[in-house]
Every structure is written in structure tokens, then in C-alpha cells.
Length: 320
Ligand SMILES: Nc1nc2c(ncn2[C@@H]2O[C@H](COP(=O)(O)OP(=O)(O)OP(=O)(O)O)[C@@H](O)[C@H]2O)c(=O)[nH]1
Image 1 (tube, rainbow, N blue to C red):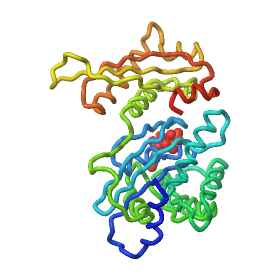
Image 2 (image 1 turned 180 degrees about the vertical axis):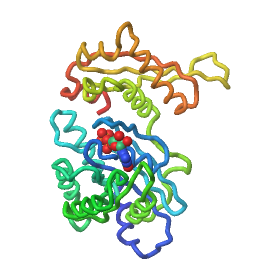
Image 3 (image 1 turned 30 degrees about the vertical axis):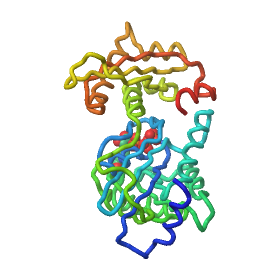
Image 4 (image 1 turned 60 degrees about the vertical axis):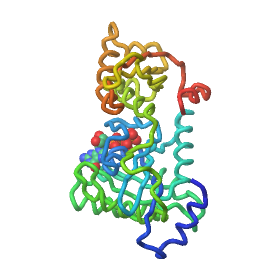
């Protein structure tokens, strides 16, 4: 995204209201705020991995909202949070770098919880994006509105308005669809005029590798999240068609490495006699086959990469 994409956005307001708009929105919020679920609801298909546990989203994942009058490219990020490890710092840097480049920031604050220090931390960060005059507009979304009554929602909206200066505040439920379209309208209103950036029908431009890695990671964490959430990185080594197969019955060989930090964690992932890893494989395969549109032979390897969260070289190798 170059600067010259931003200039027309200033000129264009009101000049040609019927013009097609396009641009980027970045979804932020503390862990578990509902960012992935909101992204999926906006895009209308599962593109990011959701879970009841914090910080499962490791990668920037984009979904594209297509409308006749606009195209909105969504960037889903890991939660901005107070960094405790090098990995935490890297993730924050990545998030802030992304935020500086988008046309509008979507800041999720769940309605079923009080505004807390984590929300305030993010509010401060996003309020500092760029000089005041050219500041990236921030739309605050009161997520999970279906979980609270009207009075509590009103109280939450008031607390949000006192949290900073926002372009808009929109209560939304990604689960029952309440105000999802309204939110799209609001976000599109902040985009500059421009042609569609992606062909219609393309829901995500995220490399298949990243999506496959997310599916494996989600399957591998199931049931053992207490021990592993911060200690598991997944790398897709290759996705290659098996030779000698009929063209109408292709088989893909998908080779994946799971990195853990300690031998004890390796044992957890693999399970007794490899039983757990087999389950992880079949669960992940159920998501991967529809994604890749072919039968898949999934080859999983577990390796120990000691202290990978703290080692810059390892982080780089693992794609952070
Ligand atoms: N009832 C209800 N639950 C929601 C809604 N949005 C998200 N949730 C739930 O809240 C939990 C967290 O949602 P996610 O979308 O994974 O949250 P996230 O902000 O992406 O989380 P991280 O990846 O950990 O940063 C999940 O259990 C979701 O099902 C909503 O609109 N209504």
C-alpha cells in the first residue's frame, strides 16, 4: 500500500459518492475479544481459526468482503498485548506495522466484560497511529452483543466512548449476525475510492500453507491447551501432488512439522504409541481436504526447538 493510495481518500470525500471504494481494515483487540469470529462473519467463511483460548491466531490472515460498491480487505491479527517474551514483542511489532498501513482500524472490545487494562493498553496504542490530522480512523466494535441485555450494552457503549476518540462505535454480534452489515457500511465509508483489489470470489489471499498450518495447530492444541498454547509452532514444509495418480483423483502429500520447546511437550503431542498424533492428523485432514479440494496424505513430524519463543533465529525460521 503506497502513500498515493491514501491521498485520494482525502480529496474524494463527497466528490463522487457513487464511486467504487476499496481498501484495508485491520482487526485488533485483546485475546479472546472476538476478532477471528468477527472476521469470519464479515467475510462469510471460516478463514481464521477461532477458539475459546487466547492467542491462537499467529498469522495475519486476510479475508475479502465483496460488494458491488466496495471491496474491503480484512487483516486479522494476533491480539496486541503487553509483551512478555521476544515472540510477544515480535507479534506486537507486526501488529503495529500492519496498523500503520491500513485505511481503518477495527478495535474489538467484548460487551460481556468490563473494559479492562488490556483494552486500555490497545486504546492507547491505536490512538497514537500517525499525526492527529492524518490519523487512521478507529471504529470500535462492541463484540458479543448477544451475550448482554440492553442496559448492560448501553453501559458498555458509554465506557467505550470514554476510552478514546473514535470514528464510530458499533455494537455487533458475530454469532447471530446483529449489525454485521451495518459495520460493513461504516467501514466502507472510511475507504478511499478505488477499484477492486482482488478478483470476485476470492475470499482469502492467504497462502494455503498458512491455512493448513493453522488447521494443524488447532487440531494439535485440542485438549492440551493448558500445556501447549504458547509453545507450539507449525510449519508446512510442502504440499505436492502424488505422482502417478489419475488427474480426476489427485492425492496431495502434505508434510508438516510441529515445533515444541521441550521433550515433555513432544510426548504430549505424540501421545502413547503415537495415538494422539494420529488423532491430530485425522482431525486436521478433515479441514484440509475441503480447503485444498483433494484427498490428502498428511505427514506430521514433531520436533523440539528449544526456547524457540526467545530465539530470534528460530523465530525467523518459524515464520515470525
Ligand atoms: N456469544 C458470542 N460469542 C462470541 C462472539 N464472537 C466471538 N465469540 C466467542 O468468543 C471466543 C473468542 O472468539 P475469537 O474470535 O476466537 O477471539 P479472538 O479475539 O480472535 O481471539 P485470539 O485469537 O485469542 O486473539 C470464542 O469462543 C467465540 O466463539 C459473539 O458475537 N457472540
